[in-house]
Image 1 (cartoon, rainbow, N blue to C red):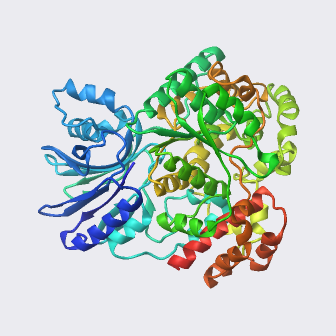
Image 2 (cartoon, rainbow, N blue to C red; image 1 turned 90 degrees about the vertical axis):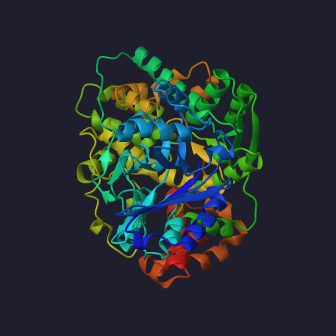
Image 3 (cartoon, one colour; image 1 turned 180 degrees about the vertical axis):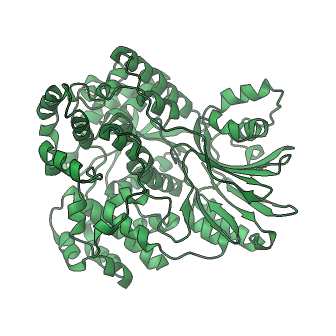
Length: 613
C-alpha cells in the first residue's frame, strides 16, 4: 500500500525541507511504517518533489524502498500492480535487467519503455507520480476504480498532491477552508454525496479522477487524459452457460492475482455470496488459507452466524468472531476521521475498523473484501426495481414482476422498496429515485435540497438498470465505500484488495444481457452459478441480504450523552441541522436504517467542523 505526496511547480515555491520532513513523519505513522524518503529535483524552469512512505507487501527489503530511481526515471507509487510477474517477463524480453523482486521496479520499467501507453497494461490499484529523465516529463495517474486515493491542490504556486488530505496540508504548510457547497451535497445525498463531484469537503482540494493520467511537459501541465473506456457493450448473442463460464474464469483470475503477497492475508467473511466466493475460490482452487474475521451482532435480526458456520466448516478456516465492546469508541471514531480528514459513511464503517484492528493483531498486512460485488452484479434490492423499470414495456415484464413479488418482496424491510408502482412513479419524476431516503433527510436539515446541484452526474446508459449500476461503481456507492475502507485499513497499516474491482471482470459483466444478472429474480444469478461447487449450498441458495450491519447505539452504548455533547459543539455545524429533532432521534430506543446512516454521517461531519472550521 503506502502513501505518496509531492509538488510540481515554480522552484521558489518548492516546499521547504522542514515541511517535507514534517509531511513524511505524518505519512509514516499509518501509511508507511517500513520506511519514508523523498527526492527533490531542480530543473531549469521548474522543480518537483516526490515523497513516499512504505508499507512493504511485495519484496520487503530496503532495495525496494521508494522513491525508486534508475538511469531513466523516478517513481513514487502507492498500491499494487497485480500482474507484475507477467509484466516483468514482458520487460525482460526487451532486454531489461531487474535488481529487485518488487512490483514497483516493474512499474518503473514499464513506464520507462512505454510511457503513458504503458498505463493501460496495468492490472492493479495505484496512485503514482513518475518522472522520465529523457523526455523531462512527469506522469501522475490513478487506477480505474479509485481504489487508491489521490488529492491535489493546483494553484499559482504549483501542483501539490497526496494520498491523504492532512498530509497534503502539511506539505503545503496551510489548511484550506471547509467547502459548504460540498457539505450541503453530502447532507442532501448521504454518503453517496461524498463522491458526486471531484471537489471535496475542503476548498481547492480536488480528487484526482479515476482511470486517468495527467502529464507535465517540462513542468507545464497538460489536460487530464482518460486511458480506460467505461462504456457498456452488451453482447446479445452470448448464451447463459457461456456467460457463466466467462465470469468464473475472469473472477478466478482476479482472485489469483490478488493473492500475491509476501505477508499473511486476511479476509472479511459474511454469509453473502461475495466474501464467500472469495474465500471458496482461495481455498478450493488455490489452496490458500486466509485469516477470516466476522462480526457477531447483539441484534439477532442481523445475526448471520448460522450461515457463516457453513463457510467456516467448508473452508476449514482460521476464523474469529468479533463483538463491539464498551470503551472509548467516540475517541476512536474521532481519531479515525481526523487521520484522513474524511467523514465515515455509516455505522458499518466503524465495524470495518474493528475487523481491521483484529486482522492487524493477527499480523496480517493484506485484507480481501467482497466490496463492489453487489454493485457489479446487481445484488441490492433497489437493483431489482431498476431492472423492472427497465423492462416495464417489454414482454419480459409480467414474469419478471411475478418472480420479484414471490422471491424478493417478502425479504425487503424498507417500505420504499416494497411498492413497485410507487417507485415507478418516482422514476418518472426524479432521476435520483434510487436515493430512497431523501425525504427523511429533508426533515432534519435547514436548507432546501432541491437547490443542490446534481447536473454533473454522468449518464452511462439510457437503460436505468445499467446506468444506475455504473453510477454506483464510479460516482456513488463504491467510491464512497472505497474512500472509507482505504483510510480505515491504512489506519491499521493494512492494504485493502477488492477482487470484484478488476477491469477485466467489469468489462465481462458489462457485456452480458441484463436478464443474466436477474434470472428468475435470483440476485446475482450469473455469479451464483459461476461459483457453484466452491461454496456450501446453504450459502448459494440463501436469498436474504444482511451483510455487515451495526446499530450506532451498539457502538456508543454508555457514551450516548457524551456523543450528544460531541455532535452539537460547533455553532456553524448546528446552523445546518435541526438540532432539537436530531436530539429526539438520539433519545429513541429504536431507530431505522435511514436514521442510523443520517446520525452517523452527522457525527462524522461534526468532528471535521470541530477541527477545521
